[in-house]
Amino acid sequence: METLHYMSDRPALSRVRVVLVKPSHPGNIGAAARALKTMGLSSLYLVQPKSFPDAEATSRASGATDVLEQASVVDTLEEALQGVSMAAALTSRRRELSLPMQWSREAAGTLAVRARLDENVALVFGNETFGLSNEDLRLCQLPVMIPANPEYASLNLGAAVQLMCYEMRMALGDIGAPPAVECGELATVDEVEQLMQHIERSTTTSGFFNPANPKRLMPRLRRMFGRIALERDEVNILRGMLSFFERPLPAAAASTITDSDSSDKPRS
Figure 1: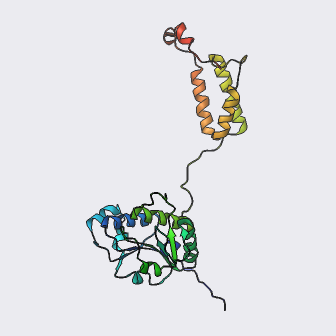
Figure 2: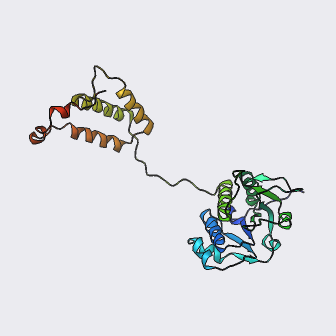
Figure 3: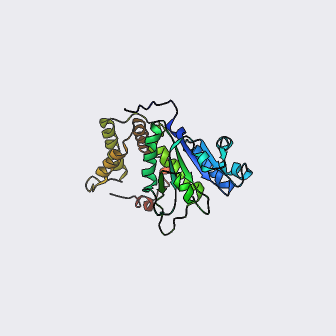
């Protein structure tokens, strides 16, 4: 008989549980809470924390105090995983007779499949010094490793939580659209062409551009403007600047320009 899955209205990220097993430093608990909130997660479980609540945890949370206040403190990993259909155990070494290991990104995709089916999943992290015990690993269905430098695979607990929360956010696609950037109306081809003609006229008049020896000044400017997709307002600004520069200098200012000054003008 086919099993039917009924999706709830809960956001998928709310089904991702982060479990810290016997964390010894309260600062790492705060850093983990900050990592969760930054990536849109909120479910934090602490198994026998050495010190919690703690002022250092609150300080390191940097405003994610709601995650700390809602954290569940339990005595065993079994309690932390109640209601979880798949638990991923973060480990830095391979074990004998262990389940097939997945890298962090692949594992996030595996967990995301379950979370989209309205199932609870968990990311399980061990103690800062000893990691997860073999007994802890037996409760988890998915060993996970972060592809760090094999010659120095030392990752802070808070950093590891941040990385995995990021991977879960990306895997579940809960990132939304990029922030809107205000863009003006693009200039038309003829408006850009009028700008090019204006530049050619102004640079020729000033002596910067020599039509008898043009080299590649104008083609390079065309390529630059084509690459950046000029807006209409930008074209108007550039043409306004050119028009201002084309004005005759006041007599007093013109008299201060020496022959040596004018000889320094670059020529294409």
